[in-house]
Image (cartoon, rainbow, N blue to C red; front, side, top):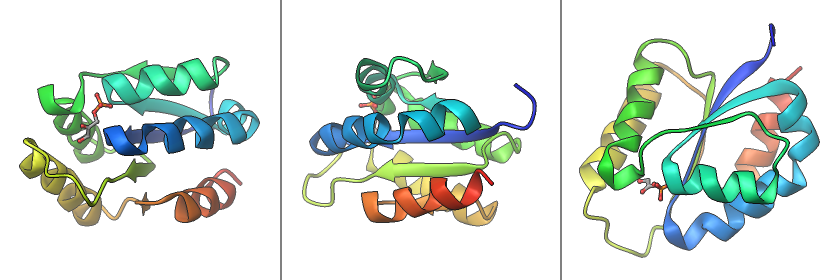
Length: 127
Ligand SMILES: O=C(CO)COP(=O)(O)O
């Protein structure tokens, strides 16, 4: 749908419940105003929680999904990134996570790393 913005969603395993709840709680706003790209497992959880959403599932993060989202940012296709990061668990693909955040900074994409910021981001950007 023309005029919709593109949102990238990612959540680490310990944050996936939070992401599912975020999607469920904001289903109407997300459905109306946002096209969503998500890493594989996160996208599955989001669709389970909010089936009406337009979600394209990419590869799982550890298998390259973070880098796919980075590529979309680099080509100008992502308007905002919501990444619920688990700060307490070491990740084998930590370099990919850092690279993705780096691109979000380079291309000046609004980036929410927790729920409080994510709520404000989607509320402000869809207008
Ligand atoms: O690991 C991730 C981000 O670094 C998320 O990937 P999944 O959504 O496939 O679990």
